[in-house]
Image (tube, rainbow, N blue to C red; front, side):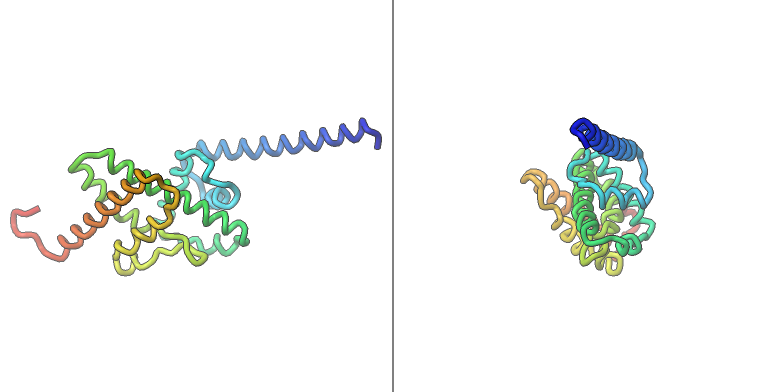
Length: 200
């Protein structure tokens, strides 16, 4: 092979690589602009890309899809059993990234409200928070919450995964967690003790 042929071959390889990269990027851009993803697409996002670098809006769409999946009761055991160690590690890291984005969005929404809208918002979010599991020991661990309704255990397990927060973000998270927990206690207390006539 002469020098011209070698250069031509290298050029073809380079063009082929650029075409593949462009095609893959087009697929990711198309997916990131969609509002919903099926489970296979969620697995692809979690195992084939570093979600730390994707826009927050995409993270929230992926997280909300997870939220719907967990609400429907899917446990992801089949999908997890099909992953090798490298893809599982990527999934663990990406799931932590989504968990943080998902929870911080709830924190931001809470602080954007005034009372009594904050209390109403907490009521609407307690069940969603209780269903969001921590990924631990190779699977999504919903923990004791769904069995014993102990939010005092679930919130610290979720919050412990947030390792990259600024001090001001950490303070807001702690205030929100405290508000969620107090509201959860109040709801449970009201269910245990019947209200007197005229009380609400």
